[in-house]
Figure 1 (cartoon, rainbow, N blue to C red):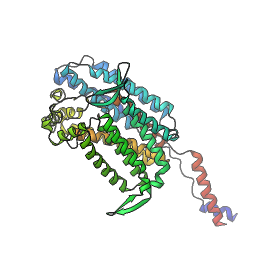
Figure 2 (cartoon, rainbow, N blue to C red):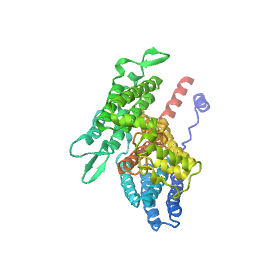
Figure 3 (cartoon, rainbow, N blue to C red):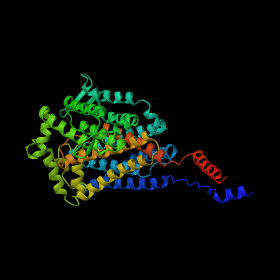
Figure 4 (cartoon, rainbow, N blue to C red):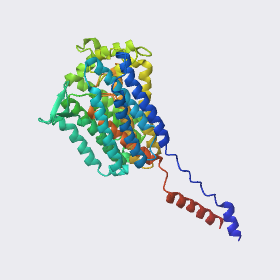
Length: 464
């Protein structure tokens, strides 16, 4: 009897089972708000440029609403605990991009906005496919070396003589059946998966410190192999394909993922030194890179005037912008893809451009938050790689547009015209949705009950 009383006094109360909110209602409200912003921007373009409501406004609203509704329903069914903020941010960015492309269509007499909406529908289809077939993100870590090989093969596809295709001097496209596609966008996601799976296996070795130099613990020489291989691979892509953007992006993602895996600042320092060394070497060997750096130092010597016109547009927009449909963004070359950030900055002003950057920052932070909450190391690294790579691409693109860094030729995710980028970014978002669902999903009841039982038994033994 005394033993029972002792157990009653010392045994902790059973923990209350708190089921986290799924957030699907919040997501639905935010999606309605996002569709409203996108439709308002689309209508404002015609009101500002032509003084009338676009005749296809209802068709645009219906198409955007249908694609959004499909994505929302699939999340409700297959990822009910996913972060409710990710999808509304993506829909808002896609809507703003469609509105600006429509604005440029009015100026150029083209119909690229309808094509972009079609690519968005294809992206949502792949988004649904990823959520349906990838039930557990951990299955992606089973074949890291095969995934790495597949990513490298996708990178070299544009070099093949028959299907390889060059646009504006960069050989990063393939042409199949009259349609062009940039396989590097798919390779980026596959290589991030391969990096995460590889670093899970080798992070303990990479975390070991070597010699100390200038107060920094450098990695051991035998552990430098992976980063040197990626560095040489990035330089090889740059030299052969004559493209600066993917090289900087892939190498930057790998360095950031090593830092997340090892928590050693020495890898960041080493990565920056290698980027500088590779930049100086590319400037001396690759004429395309030397040209980009010269135009960065003096944008007025560029015969096309890309960066100069971008800066003029941003200055003309000022703090609050000219208003949608009332600027001259068509004067900036390639405003629909590479320089869409400049076009938006001209008509929405610095305030609107900062709001767009904050949306990107919020999207990346939600991915990093999912990585912090995940229980498995592969999921943590994969979420960190996807989120960091996403924001790094935005920094590289907008940094080139504003002359903070040399122009690289990458596209702004979800805003720029281009099927390859838009479709594969929807796949990236699907993976973030899957990871956030796993992070926010409550732990199985068996694990909680077993841990409670173990605690109670341990306390009874101590009393005895």
